Length: 114
Ligand code: AMP
Image (cartoon, rainbow, N blue to C red; front, side, top):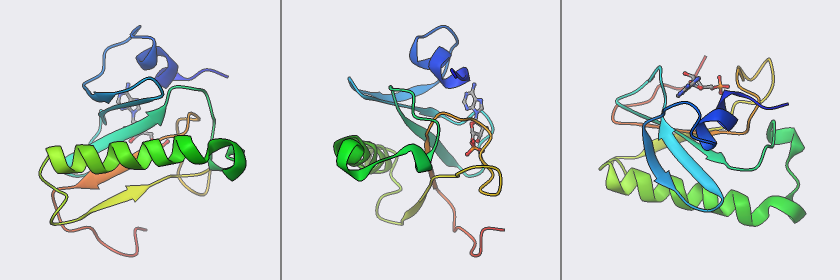
């Protein structure tokens, strides 16, 4: 089922896009939890981490990580460090069922995350 992120991919609703390639889109989270909070998503509809298969999606996953590293560098948080998070399912705190990698940085992250 399509989510609000499909509408962002199709440019039907606005988003503050910071990176785009043929397969990946990244935009600022509307409710940032850190000074830098970017969502990095595949353009194809994959609901959640448990729908991923290494054999099928390895390249795509690499592209998500490459995008995260590029954005972190551009936003000046690569050297100090940052956090990458996939929330999965209800207990994981997932609200939008279109796979997305959270890139969080610009402050010291806490652990455990709660
Ligand atoms: P999750 O809880 O892992 O599913 O994260 C979903 C994230 O999407 C949350 O951090 C929301 O703030 C964010 N979000 C929801 N709608 C939008 C939107 N239209 N533009 C940007 N971020 C959004």
